[in-house]
Every structure is written in structure tokens, then in C-alpha cells.
Image (cartoon, rainbow, N blue to C red; front, side):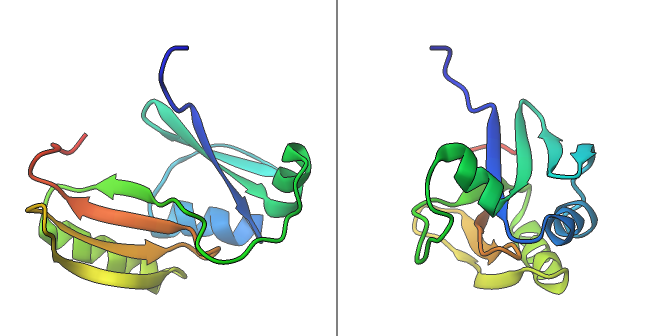
Length: 132
């Protein structure tokens, strides 16, 4: 296997609302949008938004879920100030601030927001990982 993640697909409750959040609020460019899925190109990885009931059906699992999903998406930025700015932008655009930006034990600066469906995004400035 050639190691890579090709797509991250999020099961969303309201495709139109989530598409607007990712495109208008976060500024992601829509590559293709269909009635049942929206694709955003993120360099070598793609983000797909797909209605939760269709994604669960495709995988053959129940759509109900609760609690912590045991993963977070992450986005590195160029400075601690950008961490705060992006978290505030997400909160103003329909997401929610989960954890304010703060100095970390590993020498960086990070915080979290949740998208309209509650998916966690860590926003971090990490001096050991240059912005890609």
C-alpha cells in the first residue's frame, strides 16, 4: 500500500449549510458539487461532505452516534495570531469555539473549533512543523 489519505468524508446533517460553512466561512474552494456530495480539494487530500444517512448506509452502519468521535481534523497556520483569527472566523460563521487558542506544552499555540455538525478542528501553530 502506498501510504496516503485520499479523502476525508464527513457525514453532515445539512449538506447545503455545511457546504456554505466550508466555502464561505473557511474559504475552501468547491471543486465539484452534486445534489448529494460536495468536494473540496485540499492539496493532495480531498474533503467530501456527504449526508450522514447516505454515508452510514454506504458503510452499512447505523447513522446514530453520540459522544466524542475519537478524532479531530487539524490545520496548521503560520502564527499564533492566525490560530485565534481562524477560530473566531469559524465561530462567527456558524461553527463554535471549543477551546480558545493557548500556549501548548510542546512549544506551540493551538485551539479548537467545531463545524456545524460538531466535527472538531484543531488550529495550530507548531514551530516544528512548517506550514504546508
